[in-house]
Amino acid sequence: MEKDNRTQQPLSFEAAKKDRDAEFALLEKLLGEEYVRALQPARSEKPAPVIPLR
Image 1 (spheres, rainbow, N blue to C red):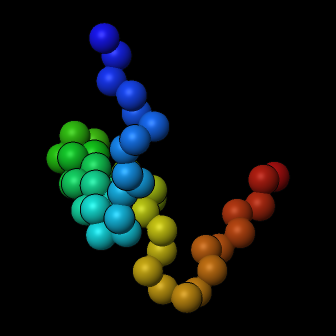
Image 2 (image 1 turned 30 degrees about the vertical axis):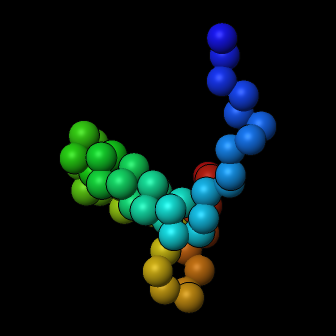
């Protein structure tokens, strides 16, 4: 019989943050630091540079 997922509680903020951090740690291990750094949101307030397409 399948488990009813409707009764599950949503993740708390801390649990979701922990999951996200664990996911990034695994990605970093598998793919290397540069790739993960590109995926993570910037920690500074400065916007990312706009790269022209031509």
